[in-house]
Image (cartoon, rainbow, N blue to C red; front, side):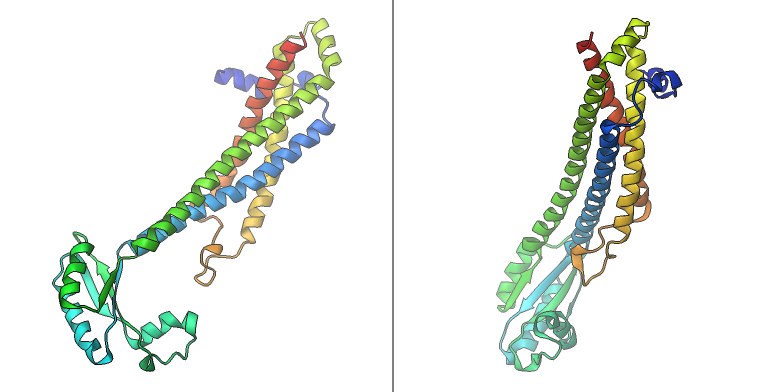
Length: 299
């Protein structure tokens, strides 16, 4: 279908517009379906973009972080900590390493045990924070050396729980895009049904138009224009309502974790503006296909 043909289909023609009744249940159905689907598409898009940001943030923040845990008797803890720091300072691929203070360890445990946890009376392991550098850390080799020189040390590079978290966020992003595709398919199906119903209801009018010399292309253009405009305006309303709902969602916060921050950021706020355009395109193709097929059946 050429661009000129598309322009001719969308160009307003008052004579052809009279072919399709301006009101009726098909008009209401088209407006409602396009609006509802656009509303859902806004949230699916917001979920997909937020999940992508979450996956990128988790991957970036955790990729270069490694933790060393030292479990040893109290009289050996300081010696093993110093030995571990010495090994780490001599290991290629480590940018920095430092032992967490008692206050920092208490802050890490306070969400589970409260702020008044007496660490000095409990056998709490010593944690060492390791930041990777170039050319990267050889975790297997470091574990072997630590096992020989610091028996109480356990190296955790967060791989076991980092990768499932990142993959879960990426799966949510894919689910959002799949949802948008399903929404588009459902919109096309419902508009096709509405167009078929409108064509069938106006079968006698179509027959009269043919008797007076109207071509099928003229009749099809009338239905395509009417349903495309209905879908577009319905989608505009749905997007406005959807973006209002997104604005009312709670903002991102550390306390809320991944349950907050599901809105748009930066240029992402412009993406929902594409939904009415895509909805109109879906309606255009669906109605053109339905009209061409139905007019052949009525011949």
